[in-house]
Image: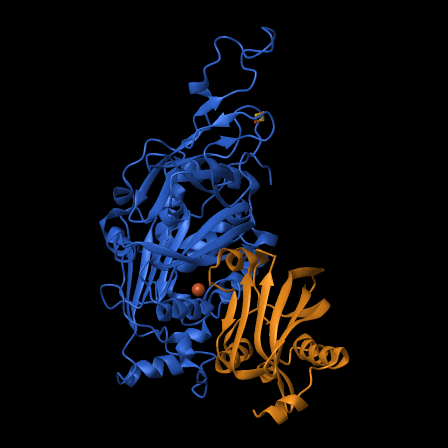
Length: 164
Length: 415
Ligand code: FES
Ligand SMILES: [Fe+2]
């Protein structure tokens, strides 16, 4: 990327940022799982990591991918190989904040809650936590370079099927 | 049904498991006493979790909170996390390092091995009050468990009359155990914690059941990780309580021949599916032998699993008759390079609450509990794959190890 192009890639406005996340969450909330990897660059990192691991410096995640390919595999597994009870999941975020910027990228932080509803069941909090993201500002728009979701919820009510 | 009525096991007991054992609250309480607080070695953690003198971890064994600590002389101790004075749970943190343990309520102080070493105002104030003269601190420490450290894992028992761990699991299982726990220094990779809404025994059944692995877990069959025709070994100790399931995955380029026919006939098999990033399941051999999978279930408290380069202890903590916690401790070896660490983290995607494979199990356990609960008094499970026999096998079409566990369970519960 030359300097001229980089200069044109201005830091997105808060509206643009909200549009990006709203469309990301809408895709997930509508369970359009196969479209989920499209929000990431090829060389990406995705993690849902328990807070106890994150704070202790342990690398184990509850859900992990270190390439877009692995996210495609996750989507494929959910759609074609995994067995689970039907469910709805909604993700709510607040406190969206740009925490830094560097060459064509911004770092963004947000607080998150995901609410799960099983058939015939009450709606329950599945996880809550904070996401620390790195977004690439591309010519076609924003994409995740990194999405690290640190979950406070250490005891997951059975399964975590869908990404956050 | 009258809670005090004797419980009934169907006559052909080896192949029938009555559903009340998963739903009856009194039976659950009886299990805590006879199984969890009885003569069984319970998984309590890994030695690296309490690396230094003063290091401790808290856990729950059966339903009882327990502290595992390392004393000044390097020995590992386990004692109930319950103040001898008025029952306060002394330690709240999961891990930590202390000089001694002090109860927050009245500051009774305990040494690293659980011995009571300080009672404030024991002699009263200005000669008034205080503990009776005959109060003996030695007799009032925290209640201790018996402990044995075995090649890096910590085993504890509420019973002090225990055979060695090796005797407890028997020579066959010991061989499998010492393949993973060889004494080589371990490294923690991290934890996953899951609350599964089913009876705890269903978890043990699940990992003693090679029959389901290629059927429920479409991921396995699809990506060639577990094939119905592959070389398997299902082994048990003499009592039937413990089992180990091992599998040897055929080399990638081995001609699948009719083996593939078995795999492709599986429901859900889609030959068109390919992994976009095969690093997800690319392992390197690191342990002795050619086994790619080893699933040990050590009754009643833990599953020790090795698959690809993922190694984990899955500790079972019963919470009620229809709920248990499953705590995954993933580990590697101290000398793992960065590549190996990354590989273990990648392979861990198969396991845990979001595991490509394990999530299936959590879900199906919940569905089992939901299925059996409404009519648990009057029905039983049919566990007849492989006939009524309880013996080792080299194929997957058997439920022998489930029958083995319940033969043992029934003995313990009716003795
Ligand atoms: S309850 Fe622990 S010191 Fe009183
Ligand atoms: Fe399974």
